Image (cartoon, rainbow, N blue to C red; front, side):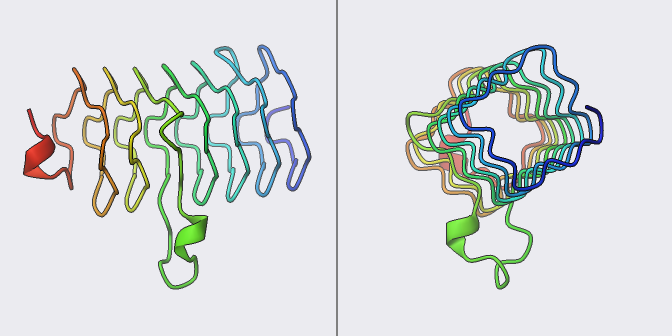
Length: 166
């Protein structure tokens, strides 16, 4: 299903194993409680304003994916590959804060690889980033109150307040 056109699809409660969704268009898709675990490849997929509330993306490959405006409330991305992923607001004036990338305190990015990820203005309050790799990531303007950075790799990270540096 490489380069699949699935814009605005309702994939609520879908379970996928070993799916190749490289370059798929999942803009505005509803993926509530979807199970897209480890073998799912979403490299270069676009999930603009997709609703991934409660989705399980543990170990999924989201390298270079665009999740701008995605709702990840309660989603789990433990050990997900997010190298080069775009998770920020593109235009503060065109997209109000309600369309910002979001994951709440019940979500997890523990052990996620966020190397070079654009997390500009992301709402990461209370998010578990334990052992996550944030090398060369951009956290400029991100909301980081209560974020857990235990043993996180922070080399070259931009926008991280001094109070959160080891």
